[in-house]
Length: 490
Image 1 (cartoon, helix red, strand yellow):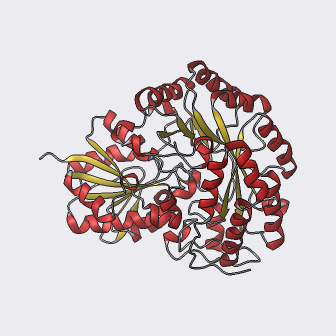
Image 2 (image 1 turned 60 degrees about the vertical axis):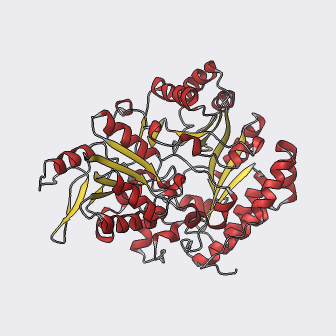
Image 3 (image 1 turned 90 degrees about the vertical axis):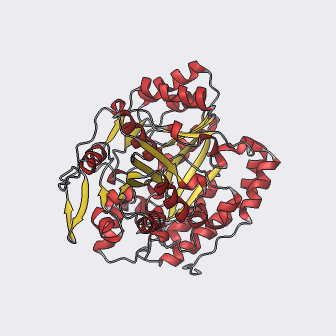
């Protein structure tokens, strides 16, 4: 049997990452963008590629490793990247277990770890895992050269972006240059995935809670020009930058998703979609022309949106906007270089609501300058906004973020395993603040969650906008209590 050149795998375990919430189907199951991008790119170059999503298939680590062995690949690459910055590090546990089982089944298969977390911590990753190579960066330049080198039985792996070991010594190579024109990258290989199995977030479909499929994700840009200290997104790219696909290229992919896969629900996964009014309006106009009747959501900052932009987004079917409010306290916001004025929040919230767009508000409890007073201030703002959905997080010092560098420098307490970086897991361990322990932050976060979603004002608003069935869904969600290993009462 001829060897497949490369198998690309998305690791994942809903139960491990989301605890009791996984059995309730609260979370989204999202297609693996980076695996699909690499698969499409390598296939276009003529390599034979297999793409597996272990999370959506609900495979155990042993099943995943056996699936890899069954296709007899030259290389097995575990792609440790999610569709947001927080969805990479927590998947390292599963990635390492898959590699361990794979090594025992077939030690001849060359293995690679790639993605956001390995790019942020390449030295630690090559040292920690039973893995042959680590790819630092996007992988478009690195993977073809690696496949060629292994095919030719070369002993020289002087390949941009590649880390490996020789006789216990770690060898590193500089990152390759980024591909400037994203249109040079073929569309993701969605045809290699079970697209009918993916589902949207529950809140994304509050107006029809039983119909969250079919669902897809889409990127129109990569990277972010801002420098929030808690964000690690740019560690994959090596610098603070943003690159855009052409409007025609994006529309071409939307056409395929709708016409070939019947997609209705779409997440625009750009770290910052709503920041260039002219570009956003042009894209929205082309979507509107097609009359696809999509249900989409996108990220935005309160200091980059305009009323004209928001109105056009709503007309195109972007029914939800996720704003990163993070905190209501000026001192806390300024300390993490968020860079917007809290005074802007009220006007932007009212503008967004007046245009009929639902808000997914993002808040972080436990940033370095947080104390109980500032966290209560944030909780009050969260309740005042009364958004249709609120993502309520504990602050984590994710590898690749400035906050992680600071935590290492100052010897702040960090999770003792990668599972501790998962927001909802049993082992979740938030960053301590200058005034509070990580356990105290976690307790307050869970208190804030229960306070918000049990609020009669919130439930009344949900009933008025979405109906009784959605209220019942939220009530059932609230009945799922999270078990926490490190929680400390405040």
